[in-house]
Image (cartoon, rainbow, N blue to C red):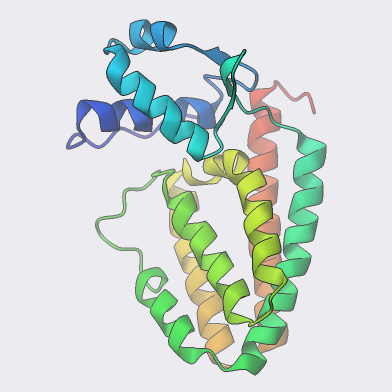
Amino acid sequence: MQSPPLNPTLTRSERLLETLRMDIAMGALPGGTRLTEEWLAERYGVSRTPVRETLRVLARESLLSYTPRSGYVVQSIDLDEMDDLYAVRIAIEEQSAQRLVSAGQEGILNNLLEFWGDMPEHVTSGDITLVYADEHFHETLATASQSTVLAPMLETINRRLHVLRTRDFVSGDRVRLTFDQHSAILRTLLAGDAKLAQAMLRAHILESHAFVRGSFIEQRGGQE
């Protein structure tokens, strides 16, 4: 899978951050890789100052883990754990949709639709940072369900899936499909059809799961 081109308007530090995000998402820096400031500065032809800040940002994004003795390490991928997390995520989101329709949250749904209704011109196809907008979409639905349990559970799962799900936004086609599916889900919720919204959310999440899982298996040469 070929990486999309970087935005030419980015600063050097921003380009480094985006490049490292992409290299992690695409497997150029596989799980378990230890990253040092010296090695990264040499590899990407930059000084250690932007590297230092980039490492901190990627650790906050859960793409890297940090321990005092080992330093920064790329998060490893566990496909069995991913399967379990997606299964729990589906259950949470189906329950959220059911409760949300009864809660009458048209204002929140319409606010989400302002962004997801049509893919904005400024959104770059293959922008993996859209994973944050996607997480916000699903977490907002859980919060709008007015459950005190579902939203915190989903946020925890999303943090654990974050490093995996960046792969889902590498492809421009996947980005456009996400906008289309989110828009359809929101319109169905606004129409008050909880069962159809649940089915659409389930299909949307299962499709994303299959794509992400398949891409990692392909990266490993077909080895699960």
